[in-house]
Image (cartoon, rainbow, N blue to C red; front, side):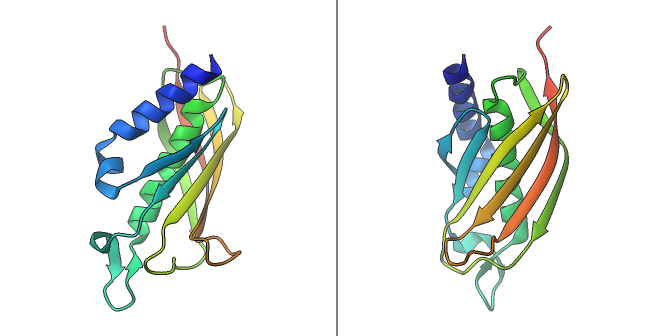
Length: 141
């Protein structure tokens, strides 16, 4: 059952139009965790002078990665949706680097999943951003 959960999560993420538009790539998925990368793209620049990626792209990366972690959890339901997502931006990502997010679904109730995530660009020990969130878990009838 765990393998089918991870397959379902991988298929869902790859089919999301926003994930395709941002170039998101699911690089790893496990039992309640996921890793997704956001490649540098000049179309996503938020500051033309510095070339820094817009925070909205990082936010979409974090939200998508958290959702994938929920869907891959062994106790996941048939679908999920973000209830609340708090993102703390720690520093700007270094221009022309790929940003990688890792999310873990660390607790699941009957209807809510709790997730934490971190995004790095590989240039510093300080993350680009961290997130904590809650996600609705839809159960089959």
